[in-house]
Amino acid sequence: SGYPASYHGAGMLRNAMWKESHDVLGVVETLQISEADLSSEQNHGCLVNLRGELVEILRGPSENLMILQVGKDVVFSHLRAAKSQPVPERDSLISFTGTLLNRPAPMLEFGDSHGSFHILSRTGDDIKVLAAPSFWTLRRMMIALCTALVMTVLAVAWVGALRRKVNQQAALIHQTVAKQVVEEERVRIAREWHDMFEQHFAGLTMLLDATATMIPSDSPAGGMLERAAHMADHSRSEARQAIWDLRDPNHGQNKPFATALEETILRSWPDDTAERLQVQCAEHTVEFPGPITQRLIRIASEAVTNAFKHSECRHITVSWNDDGEAWILAIHDDGKGIPAQAVERAANEGHFGLLGMRERALRLQASLQILSPPAPGIPGTLIRVTLPKSALKS
Image (cartoon, rainbow, N blue to C red; front, side, top):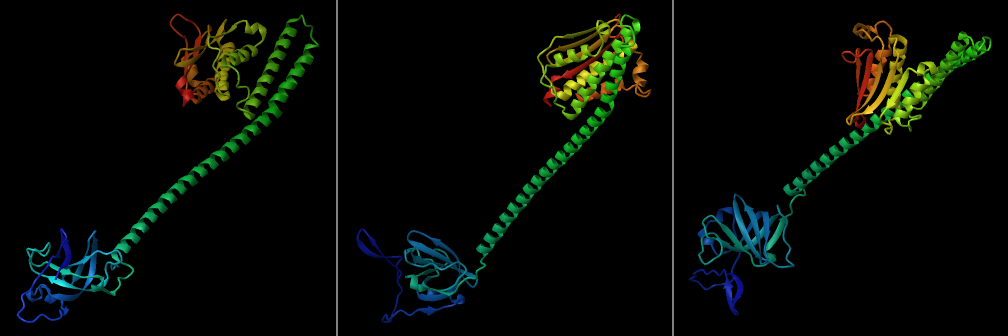
């Protein structure tokens, strides 16, 4: 028994086997053997039929090797490869017929150790499927489990992404609602200010103008009334600006800060008082958003007002400079100065000007210094706001 082959055109029997016989050789009968008969030397080289479970299939260019489980033993079934030859599925129960090799044969390419069982089948007809494998084979179960695991991971990732998206949308809605509430409150306050302060300032201005017509213009009282009317008109303008700022925080921001500072400070005081006030701006190009401009100008206006009211000064200088890393707003007067205790108890006694300046500087992420005196031998008070350029980037 063996495989037909050729060697340089000469016919030969590959993996040929022979067995001595003292009788006339008849038709070779197939032996039905069991697991117990696999190791019997009498069956070596015999044509046998076995039943077993197909464990694995190794396909090659010239041969298909099927690994079968027969009881507790493993049997290797060799079958020449053919294109039209069907191959059973793994885990099938099959019946296979072929020459049994159960002991070493040096002339053979396999079966070189005891306990190794090989079956040389002839054609695909020697392999018959007795029972197909169940649908849920180990491989299919692993594929199903891996697919379920991948789908679970994708579902968890999708849920996580959806939750992040929902949280972002919720945060956006919350910000929008909060912004809308703030805008509505700003408009409400602006409306109340218009109905109260501006109307009162308008009435005060009209009353001062009417009183001025009853007093000779060359009298000291006439001049004082005219200056009072001017200040009331300026206060009315400031009230209108405050209302605009509440309704539109970006109103009037397309203007260099130095220009807005000069216009506001010099316009706030009557002519005779303005003679004691100087505004010096070395930097005229920088523009700030509306809220930043408003806070800086409010600090400067509050400092100038306090100097006129309390310091008994002769001169006030407002300066605006750029030192490369920060902008510096400074207000210096040559008055009597501010006692240290007065700065500490100002808020407790109902004087909120200094407290308001500190709060505005804090909102700007700027530092506020109140130096009284500014330096040894220099009288008065210096209020300096240092606004780092890095604060505007953040």
